[in-house]
Structure formats: structure tokens, C-alpha cells
Length: 312
Image (tube, rainbow, N blue to C red; front, top):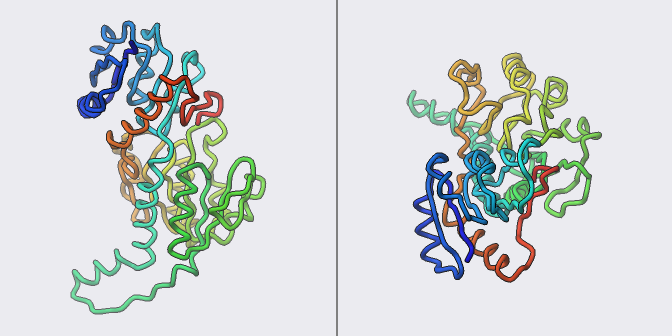
């Protein structure tokens, strides 16, 4: 008998969904609180849940074989001071559509002058505003994992010109051209929008700093839907204040929640959202867990196994 501990802010939803699936050889325990999870973890060889909570419980999980993360990002579980003697899987493949919706919403909000149009409406001002067609817009995506590739596919559907950057320079069918970090200046010089879809790793720490921001067009918009450590926030604030770039759409930050005294709240060329571009919907995560559980029973390789060293 396998024993699963669900540890998540939405534990009740996960429990209902997994029990409804009537999975064989599975006992389910659940809680949304780390302290109450400690007596429940005894004998459990599986966990499903939110990485920050699971990370706190790892020292008490003496029978652990497998953790299914409810998030795509698993940096909370890849820190060098944490154990790695189990299989960690994340939720790849389900967040691409949600992130794409978010990015394209803001991109066309800018391009179709939605925010200016609303201002004109409130002022009873009938004034058509110029805009450009999608095929004149250049989008660059830094990070070509499953989320970045889905975003590229979505953007190209609308006719945007899309390029990408990854660590290896490996070809990617979804973009017109792939660059590496060594060619960052060439990659950035003509882009209207730069979107970060990166995981939190030592390699991505402060990838975007003052020097990188100066390589972007003064009119370009930076969007971050990956992890907050990718941007050096002090440098970004200065660049936004000085007009080095046109603006930013930020869903993730170095510290979350974003501190009340952060200048990012007040900058008129910044849009702040509370790490909500791609929520973990229990129905989607449960489907990933069920598929992996069936594989676990058949002793087949699990889907979306994380490399602890790479962090994804």
C-alpha cells in the first residue's frame, strides 16, 4: 500500500479529486499546515503539494520516494542544504497556455492602446489612436522550456515575429531564431517585448541587470513571468525612472509579497501583478499526479522529473 500526504493550501480540493479517482493501492492523508503534517508523514512514501510547505517537511519524511510538486517552479526543493534522495516531479506542460494568455493580454493592451483609450473615454474624448499590425511587432523570449515554447507558438499564431534565447542555443521550432547568452546584445537590439520565462537557478540570478537593460530599445517592454531572481530590481527601477526602457510587466519579484516600500508600486510605466499569471489549478495538477501514479505502479519512468542541480 502506497501512502500519499497532500500538503497544500488547497489540500481539500486535491483530496476530493484524488479520492474520486479511486486509485488502487493508495492511502491518502492531507493537510494545509506543516505542523499538522508532521504526525501524518509517518510511513508516507509520496507527497503532493506546494514546494515551500513540502521543503519544511522533508526532514520528517523518512519513507519518502517521490514528490509531485503542484507548481512548475521547484527552487524551494532544489536548495543544496535539502535532501535529494527521492524523485521530484513538477507540473510541466500545463502552465504554458495560462502564461500565454497573460503575456498576450498585456502585449495587445499596449499595442491597441487600451489604457489610453480608457482615459479618453473617461474624458469624453473621441480620438482614434494609431496602432501597428502584429507582424511588425518583435517578441523575444528568454527561456525556451515548455512555457516559453507555448508562448512562442501563441504569439506566432497572431503573426508576431518571435525569437528566443536559451542556455544551449539548441534549435526550437516555435521561434524564428535561437540565441545564446553570448549573443545577448544581438538578441535584444530590435525587440519590442522581452519576456522572461526562466526558473530560479544560480545561472539565472540577476541575469537582467543595468548592462542588459541598456541593450534594449528605449521603447521596449520587459515582462517577467518566470522567477523574480532573474532581474536585479534596483537596476530595473533606475532604468524605468530614466527611460532606459519603456516599461515593465512584472508578475514575480525578488521578495514576495512585494514590499510595501518598493518603488515598483508607484512607477507609472510598471504593471505589478501578485504572482498570478499561471495559477496551479488542482484539476490540472491532479491529472499530472494520476498519470505519474499509474507509471509509479507500473515501475515506468515518471513524467517531468526534475534535475536537482539544474533546478528544473
